Amino acid sequence: MPFITGDVPSCSPERPIFSVILGNTLLSTIPGLSGAGPDPEKTLLTPNLDAELVTTGRITSLPLKPNTPTGCPTPATIARAMTELTGIPPLFINAGLKNRMTVPFIDALGEPGNDPRKGDAVPQAKTLYAHGREIGRFLSRTSDLLVLGECVPGGTTSALCVLRALGYPASVSSSFVKNPVNNKEALCQEALARLAKKPVGDPLEIVCRVGDPMIPVAAGIAESYAGTLVLAGGTQMLAVCAVLKAMGRPLPTVATTIYVKEDRSANVEELASRIGVGICYVDPSFGTLGHPGLARYCEGEVKEGTGAGGAMCLAYMMGYTPQQIQEKILATVEAYS
Image 1: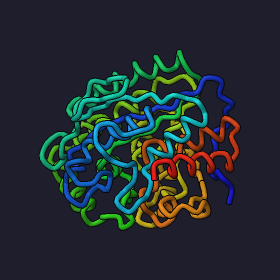
Image 2 (image 1 turned 120 degrees about the horizontal axis):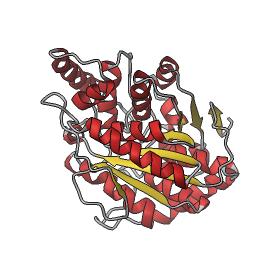
Image 3 (image 1 turned 180 degrees about the horizontal axis):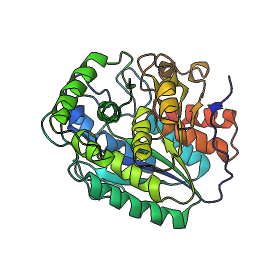
Image 4 (image 1 turned 60 degrees about the horizontal axis):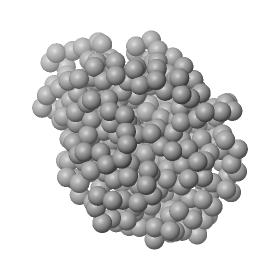
Protein backbone atom coordinates (compact mmCIF):
# COMPACT_ATOMS: atom_id res chain seq x y z
CA MET A 1 0.00 0.00 0.00
CA PRO A 2 1.23 3.56 -0.70
CA PHE A 3 2.31 5.56 2.35
CA ILE A 4 -0.21 8.33 1.56
CA THR A 5 -3.36 8.10 -0.53
CA GLY A 6 -6.10 10.56 -1.41
CA ASP A 7 -5.75 14.32 -1.83
CA VAL A 8 -2.11 14.69 -0.83
CA PRO A 9 -1.15 18.35 -0.26
CA SER A 10 1.19 19.66 -2.95
CA CYS A 11 3.60 21.95 -1.16
CA SER A 12 7.36 22.27 -0.65
CA PRO A 13 7.42 24.16 2.63
CA GLU A 14 10.31 26.36 3.64
CA ARG A 15 8.87 27.47 7.00
CA PRO A 16 6.47 24.77 8.23
CA ILE A 17 4.76 24.78 11.60
CA PHE A 18 3.24 21.83 13.42
CA SER A 19 0.59 22.99 15.88
CA VAL A 20 -2.05 21.30 18.04
CA ILE A 21 -5.18 22.91 19.47
CA LEU A 22 -5.93 21.63 22.96
CA GLY A 23 -9.33 21.69 24.61
CA ASN A 24 -11.68 19.98 27.01
CA THR A 25 -15.34 19.11 26.84
CA LEU A 26 -17.16 17.76 29.88
CA LEU A 27 -18.51 15.04 27.60
CA SER A 28 -15.25 13.15 28.12
CA THR A 29 -16.10 12.72 31.82
CA ILE A 30 -19.20 10.65 30.97
CA PRO A 31 -18.25 7.00 31.64
CA GLY A 32 -17.80 4.93 28.52
CA LEU A 33 -17.75 7.84 26.07
CA SER A 34 -14.01 8.52 25.69
CA GLY A 35 -10.99 6.23 25.83
CA ALA A 36 -8.50 9.11 25.95
CA GLY A 37 -7.43 8.61 29.55
CA PRO A 38 -7.11 6.03 32.33
CA ASP A 39 -10.57 6.99 33.68
CA PRO A 40 -13.29 9.50 32.73
CA GLU A 41 -12.20 12.27 35.10
CA LYS A 42 -8.54 12.02 34.05
CA THR A 43 -9.48 12.58 30.40
CA LEU A 44 -9.55 16.28 31.29
CA LEU A 45 -5.78 16.09 31.87
CA THR A 46 -4.93 14.18 28.68
CA PRO A 47 -4.30 17.26 26.45
CA ASN A 48 -1.89 18.66 29.04
CA LEU A 49 0.00 15.36 29.28
CA ASP A 50 0.17 15.04 25.49
CA ALA A 51 1.59 18.55 25.24
CA GLU A 52 4.25 17.67 27.82
CA LEU A 53 5.23 14.53 25.95
CA VAL A 54 5.41 16.11 22.50
CA THR A 55 7.30 19.16 23.79
CA THR A 56 9.75 17.60 26.26
CA GLY A 57 9.77 13.91 25.40
CA ARG A 58 8.29 12.84 28.71
CA ILE A 59 5.17 13.16 30.86
CA THR A 60 6.03 15.28 33.88
CA SER A 61 2.71 15.86 35.67
CA LEU A 62 1.92 12.22 36.43
CA PRO A 63 4.01 9.02 36.74
CA LEU A 64 2.62 7.57 33.49
CA LYS A 65 4.01 5.89 30.41
CA PRO A 66 2.57 7.13 27.10
CA ASN A 67 0.64 3.94 26.43
CA THR A 68 -2.97 2.83 26.75
CA PRO A 69 -3.72 0.09 29.32
CA THR A 70 -3.28 -2.50 26.53
CA GLY A 71 0.20 -1.22 25.68
CA CYS A 72 -0.80 0.75 22.59
CA PRO A 73 1.40 3.86 22.20
CA THR A 74 -0.61 7.06 22.32
CA PRO A 75 -0.69 9.24 19.18
CA ALA A 76 1.29 11.85 21.11
CA THR A 77 4.30 9.49 20.91
CA ILE A 78 3.94 9.50 17.11
CA ALA A 79 3.73 13.30 17.06
CA ARG A 80 6.81 13.44 19.32
CA ALA A 81 8.72 11.14 16.97
CA MET A 82 7.88 13.32 13.96
CA THR A 83 8.85 16.58 15.65
CA GLU A 84 12.20 15.00 16.54
CA LEU A 85 12.68 13.65 13.01
CA THR A 86 11.85 16.93 11.28
CA GLY A 87 13.35 19.24 13.89
CA ILE A 88 10.13 21.26 14.00
CA PRO A 89 9.21 22.29 17.56
CA PRO A 90 5.49 21.91 18.34
CA LEU A 91 3.26 24.90 18.95
CA PHE A 92 0.30 24.35 21.27
CA ILE A 93 -2.84 26.47 21.36
CA ASN A 94 -5.10 26.41 24.42
CA ALA A 95 -8.70 26.66 23.23
CA GLY A 96 -10.18 25.89 26.64
CA LEU A 97 -8.58 23.62 29.25
CA LYS A 98 -9.56 22.87 32.80
CA ASN A 99 -5.98 22.28 33.98
CA ARG A 100 -3.04 24.66 33.84
CA MET A 101 -0.59 24.18 30.98
CA THR A 102 2.98 23.19 31.88
CA VAL A 103 4.64 23.92 28.51
CA PRO A 104 4.73 27.14 26.43
CA PHE A 105 1.56 27.82 24.45
CA ILE A 106 -0.66 30.39 22.75
CA ASP A 107 -3.80 31.10 24.77
CA ALA A 108 -7.08 31.60 22.89
CA LEU A 109 -8.66 32.49 26.25
CA GLY A 110 -11.42 29.89 26.18
CA GLU A 111 -13.08 27.67 28.76
CA PRO A 112 -13.81 23.91 28.75
CA GLY A 113 -16.88 22.93 26.77
CA ASN A 114 -20.08 22.11 28.63
CA ASP A 115 -22.52 19.23 28.23
CA PRO A 116 -24.81 20.32 25.33
CA ARG A 117 -27.75 18.45 26.82
CA LYS A 118 -27.81 20.84 29.78
CA GLY A 119 -26.95 24.23 28.31
CA ASP A 120 -24.82 26.02 25.76
CA ALA A 121 -21.63 24.05 25.19
CA VAL A 122 -19.37 26.93 24.08
CA PRO A 123 -20.88 30.30 25.07
CA GLN A 124 -17.70 32.03 23.85
CA ALA A 125 -17.78 30.46 20.35
CA LYS A 126 -17.83 33.73 18.40
CA THR A 127 -15.11 35.24 20.57
CA LEU A 128 -12.97 32.12 20.16
CA TYR A 129 -13.47 32.31 16.40
CA ALA A 130 -12.22 35.91 16.45
CA HIS A 131 -9.23 34.91 18.57
CA GLY A 132 -8.52 32.07 16.13
CA ARG A 133 -8.48 34.59 13.28
CA GLU A 134 -5.88 36.67 15.13
CA ILE A 135 -3.74 33.56 15.73
CA GLY A 136 -4.05 32.63 12.05
CA ARG A 137 -2.88 36.09 10.98
CA PHE A 138 0.14 35.85 13.27
CA LEU A 139 1.08 32.38 12.04
CA SER A 140 0.75 33.62 8.44
CA ARG A 141 3.67 35.96 9.07
CA THR A 142 5.89 33.22 10.46
CA SER A 143 5.19 30.20 8.22
CA ASP A 144 4.16 29.02 4.76
CA LEU A 145 2.66 25.67 5.84
CA LEU A 146 0.59 25.02 8.95
CA VAL A 147 -0.26 21.46 9.96
CA LEU A 148 -2.93 21.96 12.61
CA GLY A 149 -3.99 19.06 14.83
CA GLU A 150 -6.25 18.75 17.86
CA CYS A 151 -6.46 17.00 21.18
CA VAL A 152 -9.95 17.11 22.69
CA PRO A 153 -11.04 13.99 24.58
CA GLY A 154 -14.73 13.46 23.93
CA GLY A 155 -14.44 15.66 20.86
CA THR A 156 -15.78 13.09 18.42
CA THR A 157 -19.12 13.28 20.23
CA SER A 158 -19.28 17.08 20.09
CA ALA A 159 -18.24 16.81 16.43
CA LEU A 160 -21.14 14.41 15.87
CA CYS A 161 -23.56 16.95 17.37
CA VAL A 162 -22.22 19.77 15.19
CA LEU A 163 -22.22 17.70 11.99
CA ARG A 164 -25.76 16.45 12.58
CA ALA A 165 -26.96 19.97 13.44
CA LEU A 166 -25.49 21.17 10.13
CA GLY A 167 -27.45 18.48 8.28
CA TYR A 168 -24.81 15.81 7.66
CA PRO A 169 -25.61 12.11 8.21
CA ALA A 170 -22.46 11.71 10.27
CA SER A 171 -21.08 8.66 12.02
CA VAL A 172 -17.92 9.47 13.94
CA SER A 173 -14.87 7.49 14.97
CA SER A 174 -13.60 6.59 18.44
CA SER A 175 -10.34 5.82 20.24
CA PHE A 176 -11.99 2.62 21.50
CA VAL A 177 -11.72 -0.58 19.45
CA LYS A 178 -15.47 -0.95 19.99
CA ASN A 179 -16.99 2.44 19.26
CA PRO A 180 -19.64 3.34 21.89
CA VAL A 181 -22.03 4.28 19.09
CA ASN A 182 -25.21 3.86 21.13
CA ASN A 183 -23.94 6.17 23.89
CA LYS A 184 -22.93 8.83 21.37
CA GLU A 185 -26.20 8.57 19.48
CA ALA A 186 -28.29 8.90 22.63
CA LEU A 187 -26.36 11.95 23.79
CA CYS A 188 -26.48 13.55 20.35
CA GLN A 189 -30.23 13.06 20.09
CA GLU A 190 -30.71 14.73 23.48
CA ALA A 191 -28.50 17.66 22.49
CA LEU A 192 -30.26 18.11 19.16
CA ALA A 193 -33.67 17.90 20.82
CA ARG A 194 -32.65 20.80 23.05
CA LEU A 195 -31.35 22.66 19.98
CA ALA A 196 -34.65 22.09 18.16
CA LYS A 197 -36.54 23.99 20.85
CA LYS A 198 -34.78 27.15 19.70
CA PRO A 199 -33.41 26.48 16.17
CA VAL A 200 -30.46 28.49 14.85
CA GLY A 201 -28.98 28.83 11.36
CA ASP A 202 -25.70 30.58 12.14
CA PRO A 203 -22.97 27.89 12.16
CA LEU A 204 -21.05 29.56 15.00
CA GLU A 205 -24.26 29.66 17.01
CA ILE A 206 -24.59 25.91 16.41
CA VAL A 207 -21.05 25.47 17.76
CA CYS A 208 -22.05 27.64 20.72
CA ARG A 209 -24.97 25.35 21.47
CA VAL A 210 -23.52 21.85 20.87
CA GLY A 211 -19.80 22.04 19.99
CA ASP A 212 -16.47 22.24 21.83
CA PRO A 213 -13.89 25.05 22.11
CA MET A 214 -11.46 23.60 19.56
CA ILE A 215 -13.90 23.97 16.66
CA PRO A 216 -14.28 27.80 16.60
CA VAL A 217 -10.56 28.36 17.21
CA ALA A 218 -9.63 26.04 14.34
CA ALA A 219 -12.24 27.63 12.08
CA GLY A 220 -10.91 31.10 12.86
CA ILE A 221 -7.33 30.07 12.11
CA ALA A 222 -8.45 28.43 8.85
CA GLU A 223 -10.29 31.60 7.80
CA SER A 224 -7.28 33.90 8.20
CA TYR A 225 -4.21 31.73 7.57
CA ALA A 226 -2.55 32.83 4.33
CA GLY A 227 -0.28 29.84 3.68
CA THR A 228 -1.07 26.20 2.98
CA LEU A 229 -3.21 24.74 5.77
CA VAL A 230 -3.60 21.06 6.56
CA LEU A 231 -6.06 20.09 9.30
CA ALA A 232 -4.63 17.03 11.04
CA GLY A 233 -7.37 14.78 12.37
CA GLY A 234 -10.44 12.73 11.50
CA THR A 235 -14.09 13.45 12.11
CA GLN A 236 -13.34 16.33 14.48
CA MET A 237 -11.56 18.23 11.72
CA LEU A 238 -14.36 17.37 9.31
CA ALA A 239 -16.69 19.14 11.74
CA VAL A 240 -14.44 22.21 11.47
CA CYS A 241 -14.67 21.97 7.67
CA ALA A 242 -18.46 21.66 7.83
CA VAL A 243 -18.60 24.87 9.87
CA LEU A 244 -16.30 26.63 7.40
CA LYS A 245 -18.45 25.50 4.46
CA ALA A 246 -21.61 26.75 6.18
CA MET A 247 -19.86 30.11 6.61
CA GLY A 248 -18.94 30.22 2.92
CA ARG A 249 -15.20 29.93 3.60
CA PRO A 250 -12.59 28.00 1.54
CA LEU A 251 -11.85 24.50 2.79
CA PRO A 252 -8.34 23.29 3.70
CA THR A 253 -7.08 19.76 3.14
CA VAL A 254 -7.54 17.21 5.95
CA ALA A 255 -4.87 14.62 6.77
CA THR A 256 -5.54 11.60 8.96
CA THR A 257 -4.54 7.96 9.28
CA ILE A 258 -5.76 4.96 7.33
CA TYR A 259 -7.05 3.58 10.64
CA VAL A 260 -9.73 6.28 10.74
CA LYS A 261 -10.72 5.53 7.16
CA GLU A 262 -10.99 1.82 7.94
CA ASP A 263 -13.24 2.40 10.97
CA ARG A 264 -16.50 0.78 9.84
CA SER A 265 -18.45 2.49 12.62
CA ALA A 266 -17.66 5.88 11.03
CA ASN A 267 -18.21 7.32 7.55
CA VAL A 268 -15.20 9.60 7.13
CA GLU A 269 -14.85 9.19 3.36
CA GLU A 270 -18.55 9.82 2.78
CA LEU A 271 -18.52 12.84 5.08
CA ALA A 272 -15.50 14.37 3.36
CA SER A 273 -17.23 13.90 0.00
CA ARG A 274 -20.49 15.47 1.20
CA ILE A 275 -18.68 18.44 2.71
CA GLY A 276 -16.49 18.77 -0.38
CA VAL A 277 -13.15 18.68 1.40
CA GLY A 278 -10.00 16.99 0.14
CA ILE A 279 -8.71 14.34 2.53
CA CYS A 280 -5.58 12.18 2.54
CA TYR A 281 -4.76 9.09 4.55
CA VAL A 282 -1.37 8.05 5.93
CA ASP A 283 -0.73 4.30 6.12
CA PRO A 284 2.34 3.77 8.33
CA SER A 285 1.88 -0.04 8.19
CA PHE A 286 2.14 -0.38 11.96
CA GLY A 287 1.23 -4.08 11.71
CA THR A 288 4.51 -4.83 9.94
CA LEU A 289 6.91 -3.18 12.39
CA GLY A 290 7.06 -5.99 14.94
CA HIS A 291 5.71 -3.91 17.84
CA PRO A 292 2.55 -5.41 19.38
CA GLY A 293 1.38 -2.05 20.76
CA LEU A 294 1.62 -0.28 17.41
CA ALA A 295 -0.09 -3.24 15.77
CA ARG A 296 -3.16 -2.46 17.87
CA TYR A 297 -3.75 0.58 15.65
CA CYS A 298 -4.51 -1.94 12.88
CA GLU A 299 -7.10 -3.54 15.18
CA GLY A 300 -8.88 -0.21 15.64
CA GLU A 301 -7.45 1.06 18.92
CA VAL A 302 -6.67 4.80 19.19
CA LYS A 303 -6.47 5.33 15.38
CA GLU A 304 -5.53 9.03 15.47
CA GLY A 305 -5.03 12.03 17.75
CA THR A 306 -2.71 14.93 18.66
CA GLY A 307 -2.17 15.55 14.96
CA ALA A 308 -0.38 12.21 14.48
CA GLY A 309 -1.56 11.61 10.92
CA GLY A 310 -0.73 15.15 9.91
CA ALA A 311 2.68 14.96 11.61
CA MET A 312 3.56 11.90 9.52
CA CYS A 313 2.22 13.63 6.43
CA LEU A 314 4.38 16.68 7.20
CA ALA A 315 7.52 14.55 7.52
CA TYR A 316 6.70 12.95 4.16
CA MET A 317 6.15 16.37 2.55
CA MET A 318 9.55 17.44 3.85
CA GLY A 319 11.24 14.57 2.01
CA TYR A 320 11.57 11.89 4.66
CA THR A 321 10.97 8.40 3.35
CA PRO A 322 8.30 6.05 4.72
CA GLN A 323 11.10 3.86 6.06
CA GLN A 324 12.71 6.77 7.92
CA ILE A 325 9.33 7.72 9.39
CA GLN A 326 8.57 4.16 10.49
CA GLU A 327 12.03 3.63 11.96
CA LYS A 328 11.80 6.85 13.98
CA ILE A 329 8.35 5.96 15.33
CA LEU A 330 9.49 2.47 16.28
CA ALA A 331 12.63 3.76 18.01
CA THR A 332 10.57 6.33 19.93
CA VAL A 333 7.90 3.93 21.19
CA GLU A 334 10.51 1.32 22.12
CA ALA A 335 12.36 3.93 24.17
CA TYR A 336 9.19 4.38 26.26
CA SER A 337 8.60 0.63 26.76
